[in-house]
Length: 251
Image 1 (cartoon, rainbow, N blue to C red):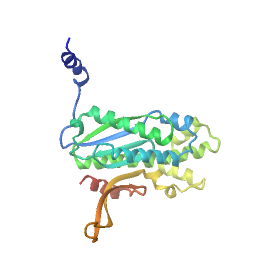
Image 2: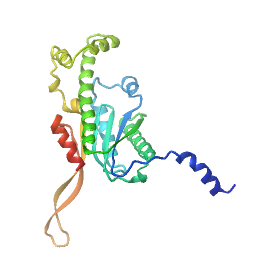
Image 3: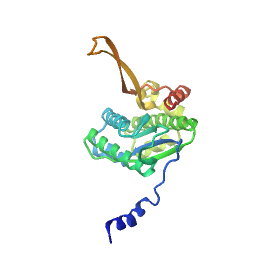
Image 4: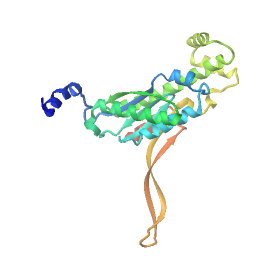
């Protein structure tokens, strides 16, 4: 059998379900660490509940993904996840889902492994959102999830450090309201609202243009050079102010 015939015959098996995202639909990719519980508790000696070395590796990975071949207009990271909003008109790889998933997961896994100095892997999923409002709701969802996870984590480790075993600490938290959890920390000398914002709200990343003064070498006159720079925001606002921030990134 000639190669061209064999190639045509076999290629259908890997492309038959090669779906594409429709035009004008927003794409948000979410990457999650695979087996990161084992990584953070057994493989690496990380500080609980939050570790700056781990945070910095996640930020380095998010920053890398912002400029890894796709037009990403907003990135958000909290805990072991990264969400990326692609430009509405992004058309790399003909908007094939499998390409977005495989390339982004591979890029994230490689960069994070290099940043942290140990093997690590991410999976990737896509949300296809038809309206700006749903994009805002998506990022509000992840933003609120960061707050909830941070409160739970600080309470859990406050109990663990007092000698409560893992099962008992989990059971005690299961029946607590948000107010109860805040009180759990407060009686132990911790005001949750005073903890670093990146722990409670996550971190946002977006591109912006900056102007720097320069000199035209031909005329010697003063000029302004415009370049694109990645902004990393660790003091994200909350609620409606955060919605407005996300909406500004879309438009």
